[in-house]
Length: 269
Ligand SMILES: C[S@@+](CC[C@H](N)C(=O)[O-])C[C@H]1O[C@@H](n2cnc3c(N)ncnc32)[C@H](O)[C@@H]1O
Image (cartoon, rainbow, N blue to C red; front, side, top):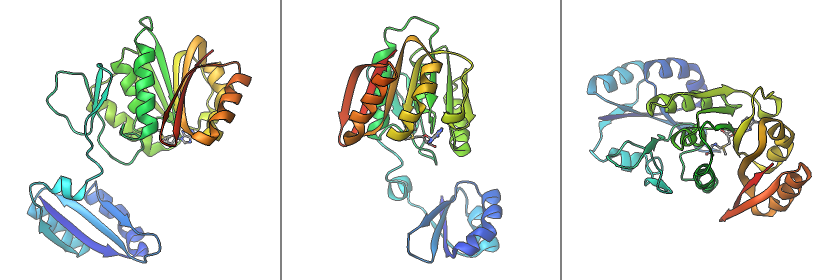
């Protein structure tokens, strides 16, 4: 493995970004606010690939040590996250006799180690233990698709993930393929403009308080009677206003979890 790197101005990057992306997917662009120069790094599988980058884009390359992942990607590989007894979320496939969900750290939010995602995963695991077969899930603000894909592992017959960031949708679809998960549909779009065409037994929405409150009428329309809604992305001080809005929309609160400054809620219609 070789690491190609160079510094560049934002104008250089804008000019060459397309060519760079087409030549070598997976470039890391490190920009420091307030600095005029950007640092570019690309991990190359072969010396020839690194030499080609130098020919096209100048810069330099150096061989990488065996443990280059730990050195260069410290935050990208996290310890496996155990979700009850039914799932292990990992960033790289590992030998395991527990069902795995592999979610590599890449671009979109949702590798499982953020407090809000972790709380949603646990609430999802608990809630789905007793659901009769055939249940479906809507995941609003799906990011990497982690909650929707976990729901398939927990027995959902089908899942739909929505995100207004098309790159997140691309990651979520890729993660479904990586985990050989079918019947997981991911659509790009704003949750506030989405028109439900089906009703779901379960909705997860790890967004932020204002958006959650604004989306409650949509969640109400999309949720089956006696269905459950799991919400997070709520800061502690905003929790009372979200709870009030939920009650106002006829949801009743079933469970509240806190981790650090974050709150997650499970409620039902
Ligand atoms: C905090 S992340 C949650 C990702 C994942 N569900 C998880 O639990 O880790 C929120 C996601 O919501 C998406 N999002 C933000 N506003 C949205 C909107 N109005 N409609 C749809 N998705 C939205 C963001 O692009 C982001 O991927």
